[in-house]
Image (tube, rainbow, N blue to C red; front, side, top):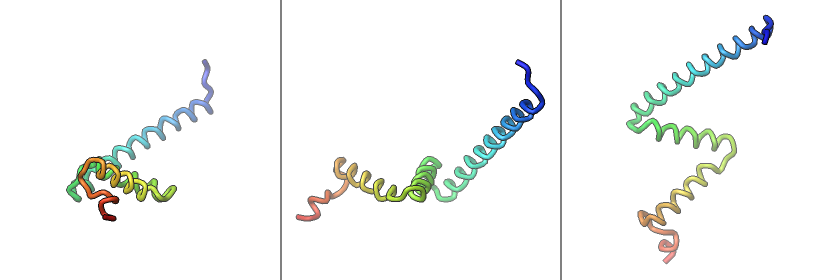
Amino acid sequence: MQIDTKSRTAIEDVINRRAAIASMQEQLKEDVKAIAEYLDIKPAKLNKIISLVEKERESGDVVEEERDTLDTAADLAGSGESKQDEGD
C-alpha cells in the first residue's frame, strides 16, 4: 500500500491527537487522585461521584434513581428501616 503525503499527514495527526488524549487522561487520573486524597476518600468513590454528576447534567433524574436503588438495597440488606415500617 502506498501512502501519499496527505494521508501520511492525516495519520500523523491522528497519532498526535491520540498521544495528547492519553496525556490528558493521565493528568485527569492524577488530578482525581489528588482531589480524592484531599477529601480523604478513595479515587474510585470520587470517580463514581463525578460520573453521577455528569449523567445528572446530561439526562437528569440519575441521582434520584441512584438514591432509590441504594434505599432498596439497604432495605433488602436490613441495614435501614423500610418504608413500610415507617408508615406503621
